[in-house]
Image (cartoon, rainbow, N blue to C red; front, side, top):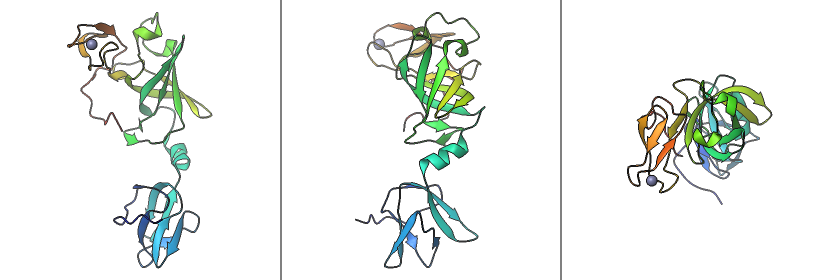
Length: 201
Ligand SMILES: [Zn+2]
């Protein structure tokens, strides 16, 4: 089955079988595309890469793309997936403000890397479903060690753990639920709920 859509642009995300363009337009890459009746289709799911000078079109996989874009010092945005006794696990939505999808990468923030201040309990700094901005400090296979030490790093969006309403900032690391009055604490980024990045994908 071929999915007919508009011709694609560089960096578009395509799925297997998706229409890319015509052979008069591009020189298709043999491994990642196929031709049918003079039309080019994606042979795999990934990111469209067009070399304008050579007029070549190629589909690059997520992993190839991932490897290129994650480095020590990068800023990532992700959601808290789980809390452990001494660390918090997050997935990545974005790296350096670039959309990151279907990621197999996870980040871990150790309790000592949360804040300049002493954190007694992980749950005083993060809760599951919080959206966090963090910096990559170490790479380990598919897992990255992250830090939220610093004013600009930490939670950028949090919902009330009782009723799910987005929490309002009422103090340095203090949040209040306007709906149920619940008070919670987090390691907040200075621009909590006032960020320029896309938060949900
Ligand atoms: Zn609430």
